[in-house]
Image (cartoon, rainbow, N blue to C red; front, side):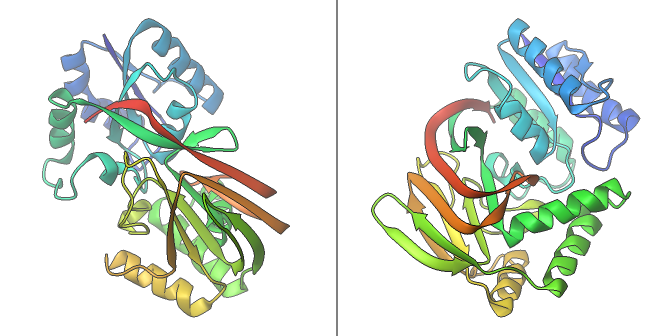
Length: 288
């Protein structure tokens, strides 16, 4: 049996619109649309836990933060399918080809209904499973974006406003020790990205080399340079060559003298001086 669950607060659609869009696939699965009546993140995650105990497959509609909740709530034996209904939808291109545009949700539903089960890698970051982590300036933007959302500014406007506020105020240089599989780097960074996905939200390409199941963490560092940050942003939106330096590793350890900001899937976490990541090959099952 497949259960369909939707995050009531993710993305631009209200609950009625989500119910309308999801009804066709809910009928196919002979499932209710769970989650839309939850009123907190804890309640939503409890709903996820309950569904994962009664069914062996969960179809989740939401954004990147919702997918982070799923990875860290359900058992690894559960088959997951994903309907992008967030604001940025960074993880979308890891599962669905870029050309999907017309009749978007009809195409997604067909991909899920006719899809095969694929084993995908995740990054274990300080005990939390994810596909995408941003550290430094990038994560500070995520913190500021959360503030924007609390003040009623949503979608791309919240991201762009947060970015330009951080950029305008200047950003910290983080003296950093980065330990990879076979080397240790001592450098200054403004941003480090560790990813299994090619894109951030809003179609911003950050890691064209990344692959969801190649058993590596893809890492990109950007130096504390306004020019390099601007170059990375412009080239990412244009899908051109990306700024910064790319590394491959099965593990990543980061130590900083100053506490450094971190986000996973756009969800900010408290600053820390040490971050440990390891690749978890073929750790979850997705249908697509």
